[in-house]
Structure formats: structure tokens, C-alpha cells
Length: 207
Image (cartoon, rainbow, N blue to C red; front, side, top):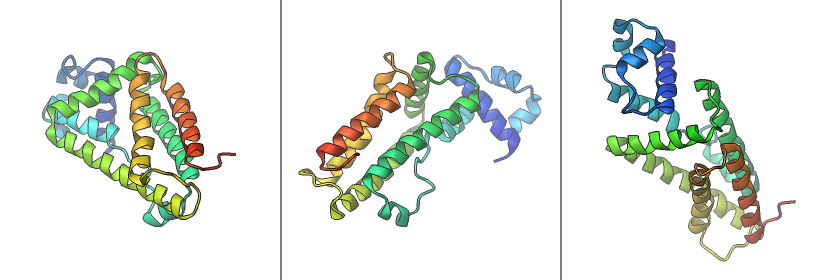
């Protein structure tokens, strides 16, 4: 990505996070970047176009984008869970560095989710992209769970798809719950503990 375009996206993301799509103007963003209007509008013609690019860049991330199918076929469910937590933590730290803010700040946590919901409401295509990403994640989890069953790592009494959904929905539910007072770091630790207990209930050994 062009350095100037990336700088604009990071600047806009910080402003949208601190305020909201409605309250931030294009003039606000132009002034924050310290670019000339001509240079700025070369990349983005409207606030809507910029906002959509921002949410795509900072919300549609693949936790395991660097894993190919062979790696996912050989990873244990236990290691997959631990790696998922680690990659999510890395993403949160990346966001902190990008915007120069403490994303463990409760208000920033709320703003992060508000941005995503606002984007889904304004842009149907973005909503479809979120759904596609969720389906992709579910398939990865289900594949790992099925391999764990086949390799006798776990011995569950429920379907693999249901198990995969529980793992994934725990993430969504815990982070959404975190806006009521928990920080992202605390939410991640809670997810890890929940997964450890669920893994043991499935017949796995977490020692």
C-alpha cells in the first residue's frame, strides 16, 4: 500500500475511534494529516469512501491468514487455541501502535465496536464481507476440531460444527461483554480460561 494512503487511513481511523463517523468531517481529517487538499483528495473523494476503506483495513483481518491448509491439518486443537489467542493479542497491539491510543481504554473499546456496527449499517457489502469472514473462520475451526477427534485428542459427544461455533462465539460474546467494564487484555484472558475448561470437557488434556 502507498505510504501516504496508509498514513491517511491510520489518521482517519484514530479520528473515527475518538469521535464517530457522523462527527468527523473530511476537513478534520485533511487538517490532521497536514496534507494539501489536492494531495488528500487524490486518494479519497468522500468521507464514506474513506470510512469504508478504514473499516475494511482494520476490521476484516484473518487471524490465521499465514497458515496454509496443510498446517491447519497438522495443528492440534490445543495449539490452535493458544495460537489464536496469541495472534489476536498481536492484532490488538498493532492497533495500539497504529493509532497511538490505549485500546484497553473502555471508551475506545466501545468506539471500536460502534465503528463496526455503523459500517455494517451503512455498507451492505461490508456486512456481507463480515459474514464471509465468519464463515471462513468457522470452517477453519471445524477442520481443526474434526482432526482433533480423528487423532483422539478429544472425545466429544457433540457435532464438530457445534464445537467450532462455541469456540468462536465465545470470542464475540466475551469482547462484546468487555465494553461493560473489562479491558481487552482481561477479555483475552477470560477467553483463554473458558477455552481451557471447554477443551478439558471435550476430553482433552491441558496440562
